[in-house]
Length: 553
Image (cartoon, rainbow, N blue to C red; front, side, top):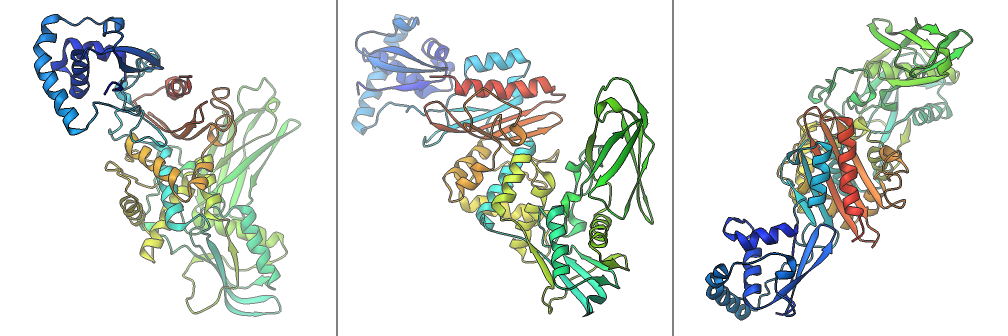
C-alpha cells in the first residue's frame, strides 16, 4: 500500500480536488488524495510534460506541492477516509490509477491552441500509447466530426481485412463476332471490374495484349461494360463549384486513368503550344490564351477554362493571359464524360498502334458463356491502399468501397452496400464506431462523420492485425512523401511520424502513428472542425499537438 500512485492531468486539479472536492467530477481521485493525506502519507511531484504523477511517501505531507488543507476539512473526512481505506485493504484492491490513466488536454497545449485562436470546442484529440489499456490523452474524443480524407483509413483498413492485400482486379475484353486474319467482324467489349488504378500505362498494355492476340481491325463498335457498379445509385455531384477538378471524379467500374486529362502548356517564342495528356479523339482544344512578356505572377492563375459537350465530342477552350516568363506548366482536369473518355483514349491508342476502329461506343454487358479474349490484372490491393492513403486519391477510395459492396452482394454494387460491408466488418472486429457516417468512403463529403476515439480504436486494431505492416506503410511519412512531403520537417527523425491527412473547407484532420524518442509508438487522431477555419490555424494546430507529444519527458 505504500507504493500507491496515481496520475492526474494537471497539477491544479490536485488543488481544486483538495479544496473543493464536492464540486469535482473525478471523485475517485479526490477520495484517493484525502485517504492518502489522512494516512499520513506525503507526496512528491514528478514532472512528466503536462502529466503530474503523485507518489506517496512518509517523508513529507502535501505541503511541498504548495496546497494547504484546512484542518477542519481534514477532521471531517478522517473517519470516512479510514473506513473506506480499510474496505479497500480488505478487498485486496489498490487505490491506484495506473500510468496510462486518461488525461485531459494538457495545460501547455491548451494555452498554445488558444493563442492560435482555435477554440477548445473545435478540436477533438485521441492519443493512445500502443500496449496501454487506456489512452494517454482524450479531448472531446466522442464528439462526431467531419474527418475529411482520414475517412479513407476506415475504407482501406476494412478492405485489407475483407479482400486481403493480394486481391487484384481484372479488366477483360471479349470479341463479339468472327475474328479472321486480324479483322474482327463485329464488336469489341471491355468489361470493368472496378479497378481503382487502371492508369494509362495499364490501358496501353491491355491494347498491346489485344494486338499480340492477333487483333488489328475492328469493324464494329467498342462496347463498354460498367455494369458492376450501379451508376444510378452513385452521387456524381461535385462537392464544390469546381466540377472539373480531379478530386470530384465519381467512381466507375471501368475507370481509366482516374478519368483525368492533364493540359500541358509550353511557351514557344511569343506563342503557346497546348496539348492533352493522354490524348483522346473525343476531346478538342482551342487556345485563346493571350501571351504576355511581363513578370511571372503565378503558373496557372491567369488561364481560364470553358468546357462544351457537343455531339461530336467535348470542346475545351483555354483563355486568359499567360506570361511566357513562367515557362512550361500544366494542370489536371476532368473534361470528358466517363464513356467518352474511355472510348476516346482507347481509339487514340488503338489508331496509334496501327489498328482501325470503324464504329463508335455504346454500353453493354459481357457474355457469361464466353471466355475473355485478352485481360489485364491490376497490382495487388496493398499497392492500391498505399496510393490511396499516401496521395489521398478520392476516386480510388470510392471505387474501393464499391468493390467491398460487390464482394458483399456478389452482384451489382451500390455505396450503401459498401457502407454495410464496412459496418459489418467493424462489428466483427470489435471496433466501436457508433458515430460513423461514411457516405462515399473517401471523406469527400459534408455529411461524413466519425469520432476521434472511434478512429483511434481502428488504428489500434490495424496495428495489431495481420495486415498491420501493409496498412502502416501506406501512411504518408512526414517530410518525405505523399501529402506530408512538405510538412513537419525537422519535427522528428525520418519515419517516426506516419499520418493520413484530411482537408476540406472548415476541416483539418490527421490520424496515424507517431513514435517518440523512447521508441514508444502512439496512435494519434486530430480532428478540427470550425467554420471559416483559416489555413494558418488549420496547419499550426496539428503541429502544436505533435510538438507536445514529441517533447522529451
